[in-house]
Length: 70
View 1 (cartoon, one colour):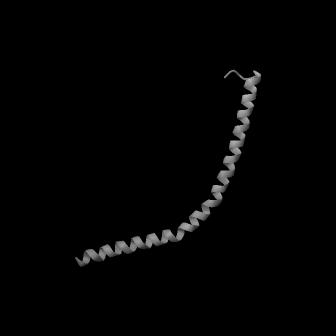
View 2 (tube, helix red, strand yellow):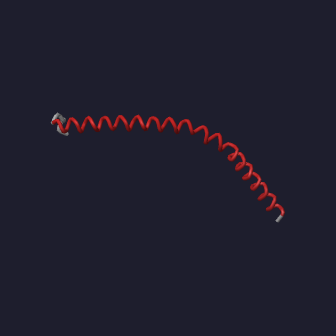
View 3 (cartoon, helix red, strand yellow):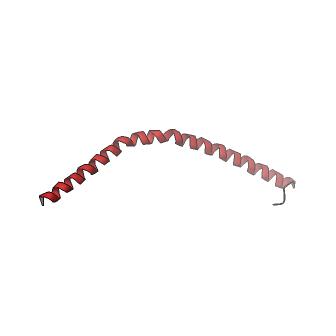
């Protein structure tokens, strides 16, 4: 029984060590992705504006009768 508890204790200590290491690195991962997320949001806004412009141009072309007939 003592051997089982010794092995189990090593597994628990190893698990707690990995958990503590991940908990220590978590803030760096969060703040590291914050700038990337801001860049993605800005790019998404640019894409939405371009799509809105294209949609309005298509709508205007169709209402003027100059569409390509698609």
